[in-house]
Image 1 (cartoon, rainbow, N blue to C red):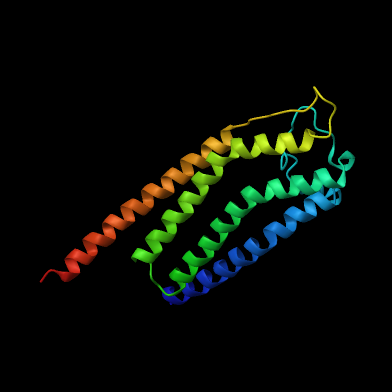
Image 2: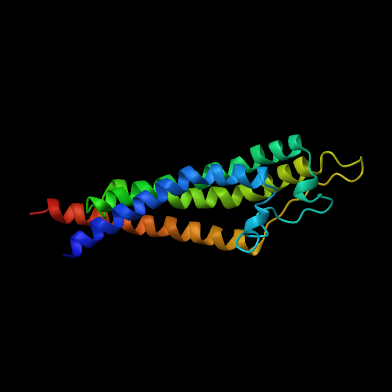
Length: 183
């Protein structure tokens, strides 16, 4: 009975993460096209684009600036998509009741790596985004903003923790394989 529940929920989560990975760039494009989803203002994160000094409101930006902003925002979105696809892969592995295999450990390790990469890349992303969104400002009013906040540090720690868990799982897997091969 418990195995059926694991298979069922693993299948559900696999599909949720696959759909989320597909919808993420679409939602990102929609954000730039609709000037930040103003009709969903109550439900969206107002800090999706962090406050950049000298940046005009989205509706005042030119279509070209928004397009380049969209392209720049695809960089972290691609890493997020990779993490979501890896989560889908992990739950596909769990769906087969394969929890402590090398494949599951490697997938968990890659998920942790995606989280670390995204947080390490964040200051560079913010610098590129700030230049992009203030490029049309008059000379002297363009901004280069490098940001790193507590959210990035917390997620970096989460990524490190996931890597540590994958390392411990891998060592446990190796011990289990050794014991299974010992007579």
